[in-house]
Length: 96
Image 1 (tube, rainbow, N blue to C red):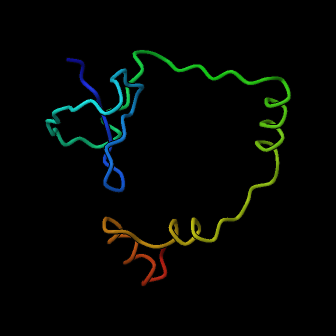
Image 2: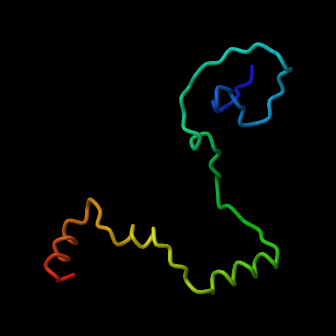
Image 3: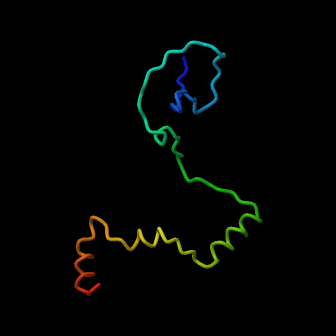
């Protein structure tokens, strides 16, 4: 019997890939708890993304455009974290 990876969603098991089992067929489920990310295939080598010339030009315009300010990101980057004890001491003493 083939193995079918599925996700449990709102009380229903949803297969992650196409399944060739007839409707109303009774099946037995064996649970192996895995995160959805662990079920994604990992590419063996480099991944290549292809863009049309229009999409490439659009990408370059965004890349060359002005930087956007994202307040949440600014706050995240300026708030000291767990490993920043030394940084906190410098900020409090004014030597940062």
